[in-house]
Image 1: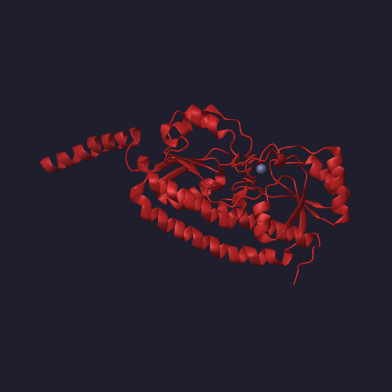
Image 2: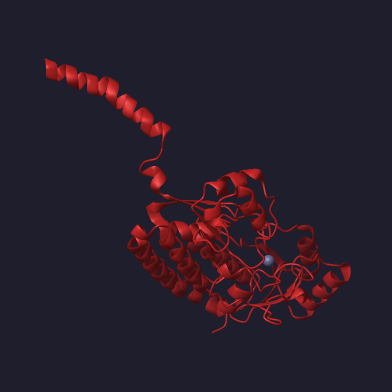
Length: 322
Ligand SMILES: [Zn+2]
């Protein structure tokens, strides 16, 4: 009888009280995960792969938004104020990031601290200019002054990004080092497996010339063998003039260029106008994970880009090489 009473007491009183405190104070298993904030969805996808169930990752930017320009909302500062790790592309892509870090007042994630991870360390930057030891070239445009920051669009650079993320996570959670290292090994293996398929799909179209809106593609085109021979923008971040558009149309006609790649965050009016004069297809390609519906992770991003490029080339009657 006494035993039953004790059991009843435990079930009716103690358990709900225990549950109440767990919910009220998530200072247990859930909160032990590293709180990671990334500047992009691509970094989020890779950080989730490496961090697995030891991390909670959130991206500041949406995959369909222009990564060069975001409105530094106070809500982002609140998120950063609680972060253990902040992961950024680096270069000048996130010119808005410093404002958020200053506003967050979180010493863990300041530049130079273990919680501040720069994903571009060790990447071979396309279009990098070094002058007097300072890596700046304003002749490249208003943005991209430290080199091309869209390097994640080469899957092999994904491995370097993953390495930087791995190093960052290990510093902030040494006890999970082996777990993160194993995930990195699997990530590299998965990239290598996908690369075989992606290269096979693209190989027949090696040397095909296309136009793009923005200089997002130097790393992608170098890896997969297409030629981006002109841009809608005059320079990165600088809108086209009528004369520039007229020259572009002339060139597309004379060189028989049939595809214009548009990133989802650029306007459609000028690409449509160019298409009406040249019969080129305007192909909207995401530059980031979640950039269009269905692109859920870093591998899916390349699946989407490559499948849509290949089908557009075929629709346009571009003959595959042998
Ligand atoms: Zn750019």
